[in-house]
Image 1 (cartoon, rainbow, N blue to C red):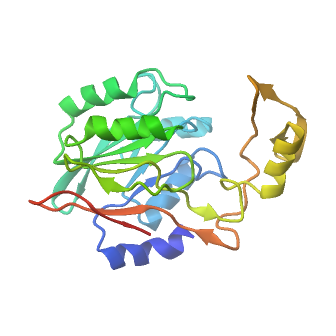
Image 2 (tube, rainbow, N blue to C red):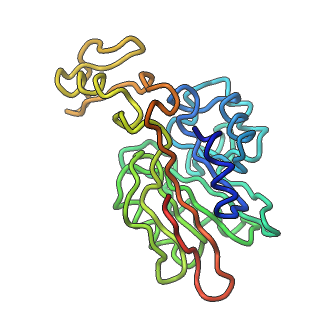
Length: 256
């Protein structure tokens, strides 16, 4: 789906830099070297990740040697990969920083403190932050925290696009979540009937369907390996197009 649509979108909006969140590009969960290379070949200039960054062990070495892919900055410093990178685009040095929220997600460092330290040393003309977080309140707080300090704070993780895209008073573009690329006849990319079997019976899912009950602190959990084939019959590509104005404000948004 991305292969079919991305080239046309780049031409339509005259896009100079494409950042893709590759979190679920490897068979529906995590990333591997093959899926990352496919995204680069399609036209991505940089890739960000999230809480499933280390789902596939064979990607660890690739994360260390491929500078165009970043995992959350506030993971443990000794973990594979890097939390930021700088990409040359349209004559500018664009810093791409990946952060993970700390609410309902496991991180080693507070994302607010982590981004402060990174911005002090990052040598870039413009900085874009992918904030991979669970709750909108934490994402909105990060937007206000970085307003005027970065070009954009773009939320990921929930797979559902939000309607709060705007330019904050200090000039930073913000949206709580850019959405996902995948089938709309799904629950966040998973076959509806499989998710319904979980919520109706408290069963978990494995590669073959419902299995024994799994309850963790009253929450229902299921594996995401039961995703639909790429795109499905009614796939959609969701994201955000942002353009920087040189003098009078930042980031004219066009959600598409």
